[in-house]
Length: 115
Image (tube, rainbow, N blue to C red; front, side, top):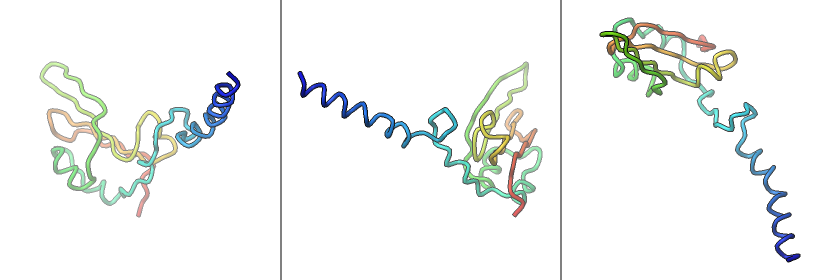
């Protein structure tokens, strides 16, 4: 029994260290490597209303689909680049683009560097 107790105590001592290794300080435990955003305002200037996703991804790289809904004959699909809008938009680079029926309709950049 004492041997099991020693193993239990040793393992429980490792838990805070393991949690710290996986934590980003944002409370969610998710990795935020997307904050190393390399997209610039000059790239965003190339995005035009009416472009399709493949053309946008040729400029910005692969986006992450984060929303989709249909209202009547209109399908809206949201994609993000560089981070998560709900989590990062106040303090980190994030780009959100809404496609309506497959075409760029809204481009919303947050904290994108000018260079």
